[in-house]
Length: 309
Image 1 (spheres, one colour):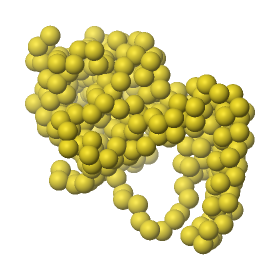
Image 2 (image 1 turned 180 degrees about the horizontal axis):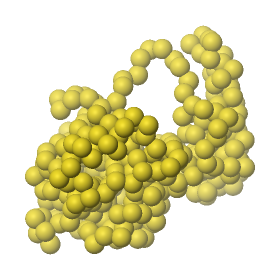
Image 3 (image 1 turned 135 degrees about the vertical axis):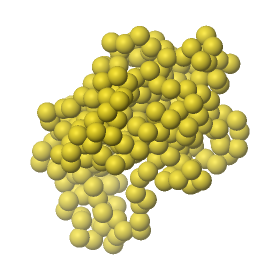
Image 4 (image 1 turned 90 degrees about the vertical axis):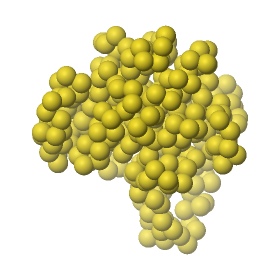
């Protein structure tokens, strides 16, 4: 198949960030290789996102842009699940996943698909994630290697990886992940009950049974996110990250002993670390996040936890 004949769909999940979403859609419409469809999954935005998008892209609305508005905020995990599910009703070759803060370089998809022609065995590709600007530093956390299949421990990509033309790795975030429709048919949709965090890890573990992931270093996507500061402020998202990791380990970890005791060890380490001076003022809240995450992860109790946020 020639590069110009590739038909792809972009799934974008959004919540209360209409300005960023408009910028993200503009970047998609300006691609040198245009998307067949852009599916927006709106997690119950209350800032007028729907009207803003409808007004700004009136010509493309309902033609190129499919807009799905959720009656409840079901979390990013459900957004990817239902957005991808909506995409599957169309005839296409590839699908891309991203949040509303991912701004693709103008030739991102042309480069990905041109490169894929020389790697027909691979069904999943990503590009290089930069922070906040086209010349921003690389955000290494989006591309990870699985170091230990028993504990599912992993490490981030490093500068040395990006000095090559490409590198092959195991776990991607949903920032610029591009995969074949065939792969989605093989592995299904992201786990919607996760709500947020580690849904990408679980999805990639399924993916690894069929394909590795290749990062094409010359394809760029800007991740417009707030940089972390020296101040330590626990976030409710940590509850979901810990809970979901425990669920993943118990589902995919091959060693039942490790599956039981490794999460407990991590919990005890977290509790001990909470008494460091940097967590002063947040200790009780952080303990609540991780103890609740541990209990719910062990019990397999997923979905949104209204007691956390």
